[in-house]
Amino acid sequence: MADGPEERPGVQPDDLTTMLAAQALTPGDGKRGAGDPAQTGQSAREKHPPGPEAGNSLPASQPNHGSASSSAHEAPALSRRGIVIGAIVLVAALLVFLLVGILPARARTHQLAQRSHDAALADSIPLVGVQRVSRAAAGSDLMLPGTLQSNHETPLYARASGYISHWYTDLGQRVHRGELLATIDAPDLDQQLSQARQQAANANATLQLNRVNLDRWKILYHDSTVTKQELDTFQSNYDASVASVAAADDNVHRLESLVSYERITAPFDGVITERNVEDGVFITSAGTTTTPQAAGAGGNTLIGNSPATELFRVARTDTVRVYLGIPQAYGPAIHVGLPAALEVQELPGRTFVGRVARTANSVDASSRTLLTEVDVVNADGSLLPGMYAEIHFRFQRAAPPMLIPATAMIFRTGSAQAAIVSADSVVHFHNLRIGRDYGSSLEVDSGLADSASVVTQPSDDLRDGEHVHVRPESESEAPGGQSPGGRPENPVIGTQTDSPATGQVPPTRSAPAKASGTATPGQRPSPQFREGFPGSPNNEAPASAPSPASAPAAHPPGSA
Image 1 (cartoon, rainbow, N blue to C red):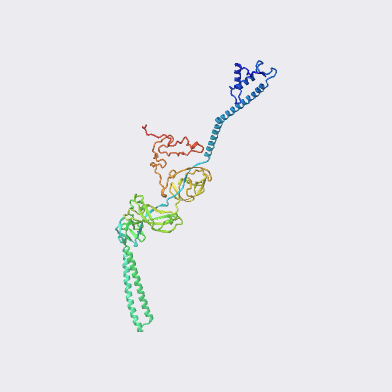
Image 2: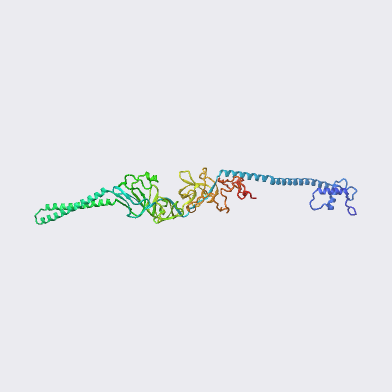
């Protein structure tokens, strides 16, 4: 053992550089830094063992087993750490490639497949427009056509046969009751009356003689001068004379009545609507026999071609009446005294008020109608018999019917039907009983529930139980428009109305086309569905149908 302190072997500059490089390539254990003198010296000793000249050195024949074992362990550790780092880098690269390339591509492929599936499903499931049905107004306006008739109208015939000696009233003249219209010359009837009166006087004379004889024979019978049989004979002659006088008087009265018919008089106050007599025309109790030319026949061939038999026709027009056939469905609501409004097309702006005068109280089995008479006061005579008029009844209905567009009704099973869409978008056909037909809309008495969704325009391919896509429509969009108050209004073509959706005034048919493909003047614009189709992203509209907001506004010529 040496007496002095142990000296560290010397380190050459080249050896120091080599040791630093080896230390940098070899990862440390984190406990010593690269500038640690002890570690630096140890590495230098391991790489360059001290020579024999160094103090306190080992014998040359004894190898340094510690340095060789440390180098052998550090080489496999370096190899394993590099493999782990390389594997981590490779896995990270694969993950980045997977996130950046494969997953987005698969997502786009899946989205495209889903859109293709939705588009195919949309092609197989039809799109239908539906509208929720609603009840009509409780107040119903029933309009029925009718022909005006005079309240009292009668033809006048002659009871006595003879010749017209003179007529005093003409066509259209107003007459009063008992006013003389014409006289008939019947000389044979006058002679018969004179003969009957003479026969009546003869019968009275015979009666007086038989009465005197009867009184005489009664005195003789009381004196027992004559027998009972002889008295009965004179009594019988007297009774026969009494009967003869009565018969003669009745014959005189009959002929006097016939002679009175030689004067044609008006039976009531009214107006002469027909005159079929002329002076000298021979008439009988059945009417005229020589077919005279009726008044007005020169300018009316219809009158001249039909033989007229009555002498005059008198009508009372201060009150006119109309006979109507009320449908059975409205029969219970009609009663005596029900107000009615009468309108005539030739008298615009005037409404005549009438009332139900009487009903038949029985429904006709052949027509299923209730015969009803409506009387209307015609004080100024503006309503003429024979006019065509419309009579309106206004009454309240306890159970108003449903209203559907006329295009929603279909016929497939022999009866009227409608396609109803249920809550699960399935179509069901319902049989309907149609009430009133307004042309653009229909009243349905039975077959529909409240707030049912009816298909407004069902196609021939639509089947019961089929799934559909629903496109709601408002009453204004539905074919035929609205029908306020149970009575539809026909849309006026070419008018401008405020749109409830946008508040803008839509262009009329005469407006210029705003874009290619729009309707030209005089053509019906094609419908544009902007609801999109299943499978399109965000329900975008097809490119062929741009929305009005995105379409360029049309400017008049000359504007900037």
